[in-house]
Length: 314
Ligand SMILES: C[S@@+](CC[C@H](N)C(=O)[O-])C[C@H]1O[C@@H](n2cnc3c(N)ncnc32)[C@H](O)[C@@H]1O
Image (tube, rainbow, N blue to C red):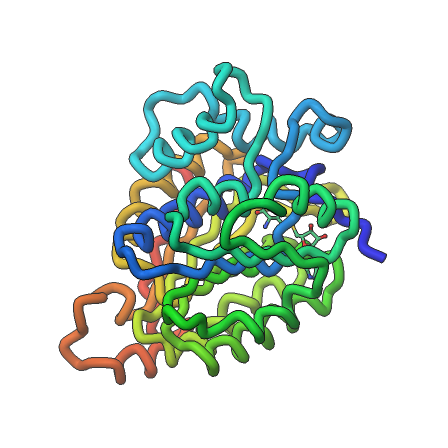
């Protein structure tokens, strides 16, 4: 029985980072006409009302999107993210927050496909209510880790897969690695975006390195960004930040994040020790084709091949 409901967390700092990156990737992939398959293995409810009891119980959105809502001075990737969130709030106030399926739907073209998987019955019902009649969209009450197997490669051989579990079960970390490994073996050209929470658990800290090893076979390498904004609670628990690991990232993502992450760190910081990390492998850095070819990406590992930009506040 799953207890997690994303409604409690919609619009928090983790969603800000995840959805900003998702928008950047979708914008880039949208520049081509060949149909794209968007797969959301853990789709949630799709869209969230911030006045409802879930969001109001935690107030997490106030420390995420709430801190950015009125800002007019943001770098381009943040401005683009805010512009999209504002589309869902045409009256000007921050009333609803789009989940990843709503963001994807807003940016996909008519020829593209959406595949949405959700295991919680109540959120699945909401998802069907929002997207059940959307053309070229399938919504399933299914285990997204398992379902991904049947989704790649699509016949168009263009896919973006968002793997965004709740990590309610510690086994989720291993299941993320296993499902991405399996999908990469089927379709190494796909774009895979994995979100994870930064918590005091070795499985969380180890996840980027495990994904980097899988991404050795990715033609366009990988990129890893994380943003830590808070301190753990007195018992040492709590999500202090989050990260996104992108396999085969568009070449536009790194410069976009180089500008966005320092600004986001300052805007979202709840501790003077707030910080960000941006790292990538050689091949992702030089998408046009590195001089020493694919071998350099295959050699790149998180410890050896990374290019790291880590910053704490000035
Ligand atoms: C972090 S939320 C998803 C948020 C959504 N991707 C977004 O960005 O708006 C994770 C969701 O995964 C669902 N879930 C948990 N285990 C799952 C599984 N094995 N397969 C599919 N969905 C699952 C939870 O019920 C929850 O709604």
